[in-house]
Image 1 (cartoon, rainbow, N blue to C red):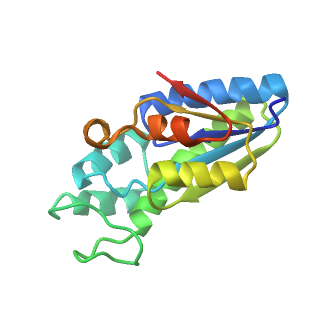
Image 2: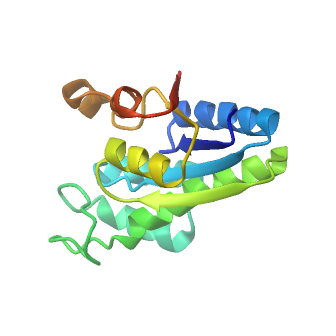
Length: 173
């Protein structure tokens, strides 16, 4: 019996489809829905800017993301600022936006029990750790995320999670 469902979210179209399925499952099984996001530490500033504009982040966050366009390199998290002076709070703002939008969608559709969790680090490892901590029976995630090029080189997060999870894993296309 499915009582706890984890839905991994990164803001991609595949993650949106995974959320829709996870919501349907939570409603059908009267299950608790855990919405999980790992900070998007490996995206370029331009990718985060595009995402932020499409998703309509707060003016303060969007201004910071636009500033990042002028910084060469990637955003690193773990300290208040990375070597180039980029605040980690920007990635947290993006993550909160993703989780809050998913929570609102689930609530609107009638899911009774919802938790939101944000992590930092290797996405596959963090999803697996969250699944264990939250004692989930099923993980639902997109088959592809925002970093498709990296997935080609290192293997996709969904494949890694599927191969290592102790519970049922569904990768949505």
